[in-house]
Image (tube, rainbow, N blue to C red; front, side, top):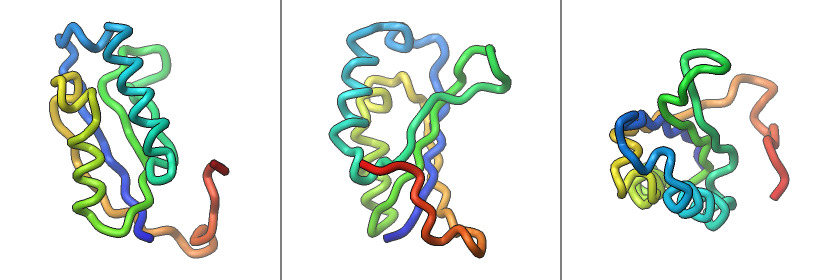
Length: 103
């Protein structure tokens, strides 16, 4: 299994960013894919600032699988997430078998 980070940039003017229906669909998608999306959350430039995007840590067999997950996200499909970037993640020595969460 490979490890990837997916970094999303929000379209901060998108009305769905603050819409409960969009957030509910987004959270349901994360729950549905919890076996691969191991950690997910919103990011900002500093604590207490407006969220400017999101980040996932993903375990998957291929880059294409991670790309499909990112592009299947309701936030991405609706335009709340304007762009994303995939970054392959290599664990530092001593952290190869670290478990972030138990599902």
